[in-house]
Image (cartoon, rainbow, N blue to C red):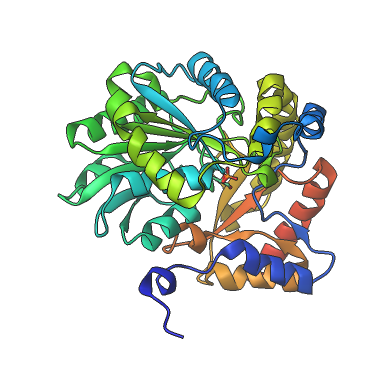
Length: 386
Ligand SMILES: Cc1ncc(COP(=O)(O)O)c(C=O)c1O
C-alpha cells in the first residue's frame, strides 16, 4: 500500500514504542509518560451520573462548546490568566493536541513554516508535518531558555507562527514574562501568530510564576492560547482542552473543528465543567507534593557527578537530562529498560539530535516509586555509559 509523505515523514509515536518495550520487560518502573498520578475530583463522576436525562444530552452541541462550560472558561481565563475577552473567543476542544491542530490548520497553508524551539513537544512537530507545513527547529540555550535571536534569524517569508510551550514539555523550563513578551512582540513585528501552549500552567515550583502571553493588550490579534484539563485535573482520558483565539480566527477554527469533531463530546464537557467548578484548589496541593519529588529527583541527579547534566525544573514534571556519551538516546533508552528496568523517553523524540538527552517524567508515580526508579536510572547510566 502506498503511504503518503504526510505519514511516512512523521516520526513513529514514541510513547507506544516505549509501552511495548515496557510490557516486554515486566517490573519496569516507568519515568516515561507525561501524566499525573491522580484522577479527577469526585464531582466529575457526580456530573457524569447526572448526565443524559434530556434528549439534548444525546444530540450534537455547538461546535465551539456548551454555553455553560464556555461561561466557566471565560471567567477562568479572565481571572486567572488575565486574558481580556474583548474581541477574543474561547473554543472547547477534544484536548490540547486538538487545540494545536485547530490552530495550525486555521493559520497555515501547506508549505508554510512554523517555528518550534527545540526541544519541542513531539506532537506539535508531527501535526505540522502531517498538514504539509514545515516545522522549523530553533535552538534554546543550555538551560533550555528561549533564544530570541535564533527565532528572529529563522523567520522567512513563509513563516506563519511561533510556538512556545511554557511550562515546558520536555524540559521543565518556564519562560520568564520578559522572554514571552519579546516573542509576542517579534510575532507582531513580522505579522506572525504566537501559539502559546499553556497546558502545564498550574505546575510551577519554587516561586516561579507562569505568564500568559495573551495578557498583553497588544497581543490580542495575533495570539492563540492553548489549555487543557488533562494534567491539572487528572483528566487525560476525557479529552477536553480549550483555546482562546482572536475574533478574526473564530470562523476558521470553527470550520476546522466542525469538520473534524463537530463538537466535543457533551458528557465530557459536563465532566469538565464539574472539574473547573472545583478549580485550581484541586491541583495546588498536588503540585506541592510534586515539588518534593522534583527536589529529590534533582538531588539524586546532582550526586551522579559529571556523567549527566540536569538543567533545573521550574515547571511541569520533567527533567531533560544531557548524558555524556556518544551513544544515541534511543539505544540508551532501550538498554535502560531491558537491562535496568527503568523507562525514560529519548530526547531525539523532542528534536534533540546533537546530544544524548533523556526525559524523566516524575508526575505519574508516588514518591517512593520515583525514588526507586531514579536509583535504577543512576545505576543504569553508570553501567551503560560510565
Ligand atoms: C506541551 C503539551 N501540550 C499538549 C499536550 C496534550 O494535552 P491533551 O491531553 O490536552 O491533548 C501535552 C501532553 O502531554 C503536552 O505535553
